[in-house]
Amino acid sequence: MMNISTEDYLRTIYFLYEKQEDESKGVKSIDIAKELKISKPSVSKMITKLISKKYLKAKPYSNIHFTKKGLKEAMRVMHNHRVIEVFLKNVLNCNLNRIHEEAHKLEHTFSEYTIRKLDSFLNNPKVSPYGKLIPHNKINRGKKKR
View 1 (tube, rainbow, N blue to C red):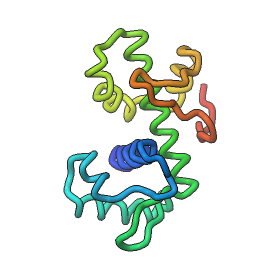
View 2: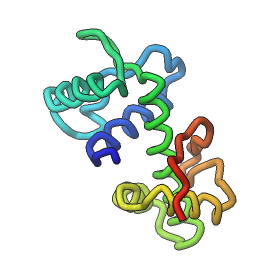
View 3: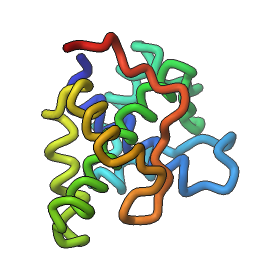
View 4: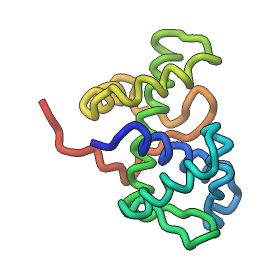
């Protein structure tokens, strides 16, 4: 199981990738720091850890890119987050300006089993309440548990 901080970074980097017209350019650490509202040295430290875990790749003072493994994990985390957003909006009728923060809290507590059930219950939604695509392909859902 991945720790919360790692998931937050992967989700944030994926979000920043989505905003770009050309994802091949990668993401700047300063943009990650702004999005997470933390210092650039803190980001640099975590990026180094994520590189050592083979989630990211970057040369010193260059943009950051996902590895295949990192992209797969980032898509899984973002998928979970956005499925929860759909549930909060469509089923619980939560206020749109609270959904993102609530989903952020819940994404770290829901098991993969629960996410699969929720995804199925919601008929595998394709778009979040904010109009963002929900990644479904190439996601490692892990072993199915009863």
